[in-house]
Length: 483
Ligand code: NAI
Image 1 (cartoon, rainbow, N blue to C red):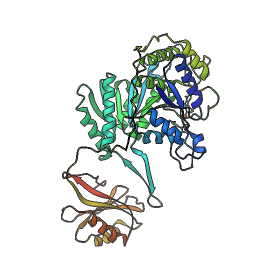
Image 2: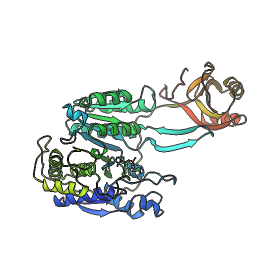
Image 3: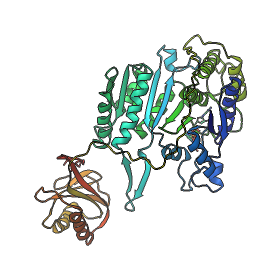
Image 4: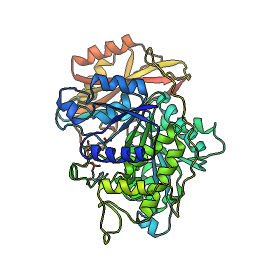
């Protein structure tokens, strides 16, 4: 079996060399095709951080093992890491956080074991990076949460939880505030939960989740979250088990998967051969299991756990009274411990059963459409306008444009209602949302909206608009604070 490997930037080549050396010593039956990705590829003028050959190789092999990569600052280019995950639709980011014997933390000292798997949605949310300045003072980020995208990652989380014999799966969210977006994610969670009656499915507001993770981490098992919240919560979990040096990550898709460490390129220690390769090694071990090389995975993991248990450590962790080893020596210590089992947390060595790679060549992009459709009506429109006038004056002008089809129902500023009621204590910025609804509640069409747009543009600069939709009679838009 052949996989694509990109060594990455900063400490990437050092830790990747250490991991591949361990794989080689363990006779892992994989061939590697090294591909060109990373900062130096950006510097050569490839704007997405990879060469066309690298893209072709990864798409034909379906598996990428990568070191951390740097995104050049201030050049208007997007992160290669995010681009890779999004382009190849690796929709589930699985991060396993386990207490490791020999890696002291406040929890290990208190005898509290941790074994949490965070599944983070990997494509959507604010990571779309769709951002605009819509007035000189106001920046807008569009946050997409989609039903098919949420179903895809949540189903993966449930299947994975079943496979690892988890007891509990928890959805972290902020649906109390983001009722439409996080509300949709949560709705999908409970929809999928019906197919897994053996798992205890529950949900928790993300701030409460953070508090409970640091007070009772042992009560959590699998946690699934949207992208940004998942990113933050998973770094929190990395802290619980000893830091970024111990946090592996798998980006799983239907056709292509990417395995990497959670940490970055660590420029402060790059080139010194002192980085801790554990996170990348754990990612590599999870990749071996993913392709059915469970025997190699078990042997290497046991040797790693034994090494940690015996007190061998790089400079970033462990007993500071004992001398640390460098990256190469750490890898050599693991190799010398092949065949040994740790006292705590030894893994079962299940013989390899490599999957046969199924060649795939997609002819076109997959369109993911939810089967849930229904009668769609347009009930109104939110026009986001630029103005420095007071709400009353804006309302006065808007009402003149409402005509025979629309009524002005609400004006808000930064999401807080300022008309028809409001408070003079609400500070304003130069961007308002004026909401028009159908005068007699009958559905509108796009021409009606354009008519209103043209009329309103005589008085205001319209920054953007959103239709007020309803499906099967259910209004699908948020109310302003105070509305
Ligand atoms: P970082 O994770 O590279 O470093 C944070 C701190 O952790 C540093 O003090 C570093 O020395 C330490 N550290 C990280 N990994 C370590 C290891 N294996 N052994 C010992 N110490 C380790 O985060 P930072 O500084 O925010 O990012 C540096 C660069 O990495 C940026 O260009 C960023 O864009 C990129 N990055 C890439 C990622 C990826 O490729 N998946 C993920 C995160 C950041």
